[in-house]
Amino acid sequence: MRTLFLCLAVAALASACSGGGDSSTAADAPSTSTAPSGAAVAVPVSAPAPVDPHAQILATTATEAAAVTSPGCYPAGPPRRLTRLQVVNSLADITTQLTGDATLAAGVSALVKDTTQFPPDTLLNPDSSRHTGYERLDVSVNSRQVAALRGTAESLANKITADPARVTTMLGTCTAGADACVSAFIRKAGRLFFRQPMTDAEVNVYRAAAANTNTPAAVAKVLATMIVSPKFYFVTEKGQAGGAASSCVALTAHEQAARLALHLWDSVPDAALNAVADDATLLQPAVYSAQVTRLLADARADKAMRNFFSQWFRLEELVAMDGKVGNARFDAFAGSYKPTATTRDAAIGEVLDMVSYLAARNGSLQQTLTDRHSFARTSDIATLYNTPVWDGSSAPPVFAEDARVGLLTRIGILAAGSSDTTLPIHRAVRVLSALTCQTMPPPAMNQTNATADLSGVLTTRQRTERVTQMEGTACVTCHRGVINPWGFAFEGFDALGRARTSEIVRDDSGKSLGEKPIDPVAVAALSGLSPRAIASAAEAQQYVLDSGHYERCFAKNYVRYAFGRADSAVDAALIESLRQKAAAGANLRSLFAFIALRTEFTTIWKSAS
Image: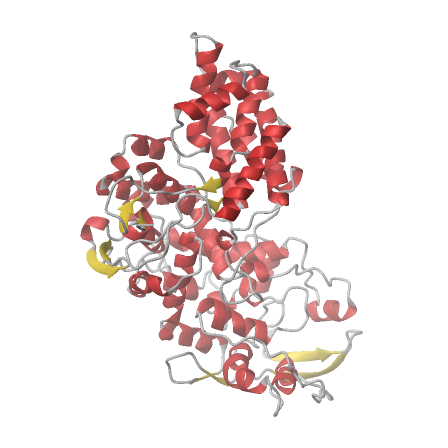
């Protein structure tokens, strides 16, 4: 069994390194695609109420779309591997579909992450190696992943078959003999793991692995071998047969189903999606659109949406907030407040709960920036907000502080981890690079500011200015005119994200050296716009909202997330169409449906070579 695993693992690595599948080349193939036009006006969140997701998911449908000229489709490229999250979700959903045992399926995540030590994906950022990006862009394959996949296969297969009742459920009622029973089981399981029906030749391979028996050991061997197969771990797309050479062809129904499920659920298709793929009715526009709507109404789509926003907002860059509890200076700064080991995750969850809340209530992209409700489910975050704890179901409380204006003033965005000092440069880069997609020059490596005068009682702003804005250094131009103003505008919040009007400067023992008023006044700039004087987080956030860069940056990043690659010039039409829809106030669910309804998502470019 281990020999078979090793062979399949080597095949997986070889497939990834050599490209595998079709060796298509990039080419521009102008065609006409359809994109939803118009948008529903977002429901005000001052008096929010849940709506029927099946009735409101898509603000417009494909049949109401206007024609848009676009590249149409992209070349196949090498097979893409599943992310660790997709491995976990797929194995959990397949376990449920095969056995009906939700409890067993719930343990898959711990098995993959803890028991088999499956390494996490790297959050790759095409713009900078210094900041997090998207796990879907990580296409690397290493020996740790292969070993963990093999360990997962063995452990999960043994757990599934340890209960005779589960084996009976998987095999079903079968009176045609062991060989026929195991063959039927192989087809059923393979359909789920490989996201398409198996050929007779493939079935025969797995029959041989099971020695044509239907014992628990044989079933376990079939399951484990399927899990470690490259056909499970990699996604290969070839498109429909036929069509002119060097043309845009539709994906097969099974390829479209797999794309939809992996994109909107980070998992495999369910029974309903498999059914319309098997009978090919998924290729009918009305059926396809209905499936997009159905998938988006599922709770798994909310998890995928949260995953995107977590990575776009770079929430994972927030480090543990309790790391310096017990340090004299940090404790003096924090006062009676004591962050715990879970405060960091609670701060991130609060931001994502805002996204989920708005998405369930027809909220727009702009509202993710401006919503002023607190979604703090724990007392540590609620204390920082000066709001009651939210119970997760009733109307969330509104921020009591006027300075707390929305996304850019949420703890998950503002907090500086275990530091007692704000990080204005980090705050600025999040706004400029992550949320408005400004082109940022690489940090200067020949800095000569070691002689900066840091004597006296200096605020964080003053120290930052003296270090980064020294005349004659390589830093001054970018920091003084581009970066620093955006960080200084948020100095009205301390390193824990608490609103403040003054800063107490302390020595390492925690002793106060003096208290000085906050100075948030600056002149900020965004590309293509006139510089604007800002004197608070509220004015900085309003500048972002007025600029239109927030919607454009969302579109650029969502294209990266949807296709698992860096965007390029050929994506310009798609990005602009998505930006327009977001700028018109479309609800979040329709924005997430948008790309799935474009021809770029359902087609593939086949070259003549």
